[in-house]
Length: 345
Length: 77
Image 1 (spheres, rainbow over the protein chains, first blue to last red):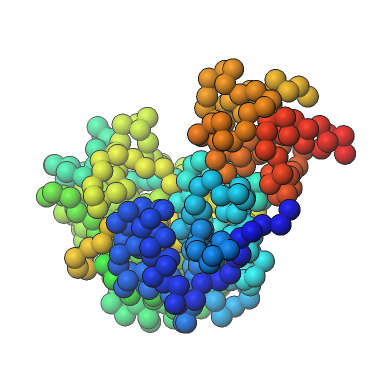
Image 2 (cartoon, rainbow over the protein chains, first blue to last red):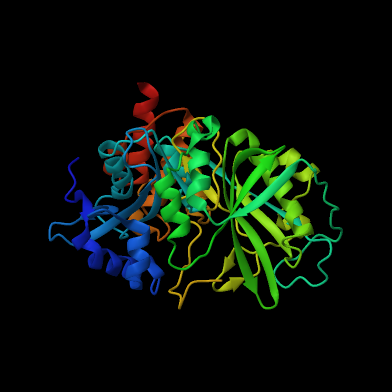
């Protein structure tokens, strides 16, 4: 059956139309509908915008699919899917699927994934052959903290088990740390693989969020980087691990040991939390972390602007059949939802 | 394979009361039946009957009866 809609990649001149579409059909006042700087940060790549567009016969945008290329210079790159919206009740009920198929068929890549899919669309991704899952949410609580403004902690907080052989060094020379990272064989083979340029853009050039980088060492061996971000609400503050850039086999150990920074560098924080997939649940829960779940009556908010004191499930999908470590920093997840006045912290 | 099983799947995915869906029902009869629901129904039918649909199948099927016939034709292949 032929469709009366045309699909194509976006050009930079489509920017205003895409921003209007987002405001009209995705969410009114969404940051991507009214903040041109943030829009460019997220979706501009050279002279193009990383969007596939669906247009009707009058060239009006009726559907968009945003994406992020993790290493566009390479044929074997991984691509994160992001904002995906089609106007309801169109004559083609599968136009949304066609947007993803268009990207798949016309972009060099080895895998496509999306972190933060709507639970209702899990069936859609399964139909397209994606694997789906849920990020697991962990938190390590500061035993010395007397008042929790952000989180609802467990009744009994753990004494951290910390090894002397581990060390985390905050780095300001992120470029140098990344040079070391990309030489690690375990990182080279990692999926999804973020290039140095992607990491620099994603975390150092963010218009509003400030990310901190810690180099992780075990017995003086450099294992990778922990990317974190401070969040605040009322008088409380906490640290969120947004990404761990390392060989997958070390990631859970790095996260577990990083909790120990609450004993010294981050002693004023309520907790450290992390969302991730393919993490060692047993290692982390027998170690320094708690599994965040409504069942255990622990609450670790995910939304801070505006603040919502509730647990949030984050679902993901991937074309890769092998388990991958996804984090909140993947795709478009760790971003403000409404326009902000200035850079945080 | 029975039409009643397929109707039950529709009612379950669309989250409507038993008896709301009939063989003549189309997407315009039920607000919750959007394009995402259509694909979720297709996936549920695939899992229930051990079959695999193509994208064009979803484009052509309009009524519940169409989906019943699609399942029958897939089962016969």
